[in-house]
Amino acid sequence: MFRLPIVSNSLRVSLKNGNGAIRCLSYTNRLSNEKISQTKQDTSSSSSSSSSSSSSSIPNPNFTHFGSKTVAKDDKEKLVAGVFSSVATKYDLMNDLMSLGIHRLWKDHFINKLDAGKRPNSSEPLNFIDVAGGSGDIAFGLLDHAETKFHDTESTMHIVDINPDMLKEGEKRAMNQNKYFNDPRVQFLVQNGETLDKIESNSKDIYTVSFGIRNFTDIQAGLNTAYRVLKPGGIFYCLEFSKIQNEVVDLGYQQWAKFLPVLGSIVANDYNSYQYLVESIERFPDQETFKSMIEKAGFQSVGYESLTFGVCAIHWGIKV
Image (cartoon, rainbow, N blue to C red; front, side):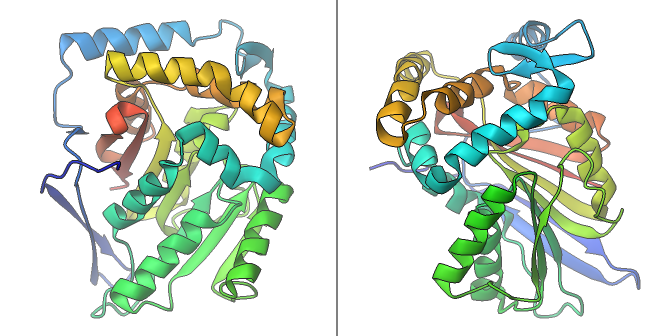
């Protein structure tokens, strides 16, 4: 059975409302691989970051990566949309295949670690936004956690995704669960995560994105937008596939990754989409490089926590 190693570090974040009142969010770090921004990079991680950054750079600013291919930036959005329209109805199956089912444990830990919700002594609800969250699993999990732990039935949630097919799957999930469907607190919205042009600046307390940011055409633009929409004191919180830090585990995962497109063809009749998803993971920056990108967007107290030897990682930052 997969078990998460436990330690007891914790981080508390104070959010001020317009009247100066303090709302406190706390979350506990339970994984032994956590690294915070105050920790200096050692020689090996610095070298790894430089190597990753240089290997993933594209000289022509009008082009970008689509998996292992180089495509025009204007085309990537359509190509990614095609992938997720193709996998939308089998999204949970896709994640099960790519993570051997462990993604469910990662997501549970992601939600519990954030530990967000309106506290009983607070006068204002929280305003969440879950980006690239069309399936609804993270958004609904966050709201369930807030209600179960803090009796919070007031906080609001924007579930945004660039792909209408993914949002339809989230609406179906809400309908099947008989919860959050036609709930005035929950809004589904088609939006590009790099711009979020329908979301006001300084309007959100919590910004989450789970297994989605690696598909952005311009990841830095997405991080800059996250900073824009968050209120001062707001939390950026991201779960994404990352770089494995154990050579043996990495070797095993690489062999599994080679088989994934074939398995996707057998199970979902979709080889190409699974091939892209595997390649998109390989192209995504390592933990330290992505941490630097979050800091570049303006966030403070930036840190990350590697899960399952670095197969994925939780990243966070605070807008001060």
